Image 1 (tube, helix red, strand yellow):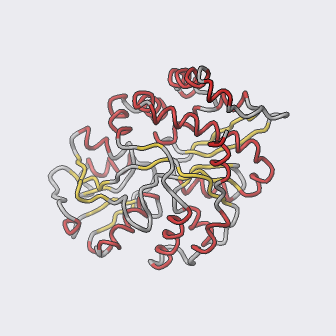
Image 2 (cartoon, one colour):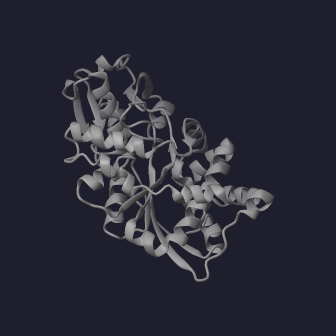
Image 3 (tube, one colour):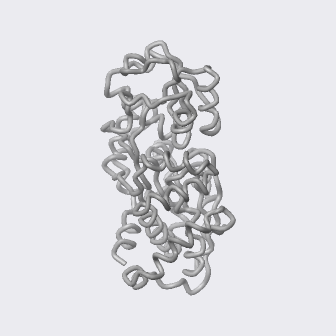
Length: 330
């Protein structure tokens, strides 16, 4: 899948040009593989993952044929990866612990992808000045999603009973959350960008700034993770190394240029450029998650009964930081 097919050609050309004329970067290029290797990667159409679909041409020059498959949810990509249908995937920060607790040992964590503050989105006219204001409200959630883990952990640490409000399970993509809020079916939503910014920009919702939920000790602010299938990693490690190197190159370029990031966000998601620009402002590209953070997640959610087993002691065996270290050393 090329940049042009995704409407990302302008941004891709800009970044490719920056890399091509940087002596430091050019000197660090990995050598092309002796024979082409196909790498199948699952991703979600969200702005902070734009690098996934902007590196196909770079990888092709390095002997890696990138095949990307879009998934609506992190959980679906996790399932496909564990089934062996994907070599790599972007998943939620808790998905490694979830997989291990279910006895699945074919997922290996590689790196995080970005972070941002997270706020409950209130419906216009509904007062949400404090966490206690959730009492009796209808709150739309995606159970088991990355943002739900962040939200639930924050409630626990703040001593807010989960049954003090009515949790409304929303299926499908983020647009369904916005529709429920706009129709008045719920009082608040717990979702992800760009579906957080859309209600605010369109005037029927607002950021409940006192209900920030990305700073819990057990979950933190990481938006997602890049992971690999353990068996595929043994067979295609050189290709995966080049994927990580290419991803980090583009990620840095986007992080250094808010304008390029906003354009990439809009091109990938199909959002209006103005809305994409606003949504991209709150996102910081780059990993913040660590194995220790994932261990805290694993322990906390076992204690809450969300996952059936405490696998915090197993995380180190299923985390490989060497991909990032090698890419940064080149």
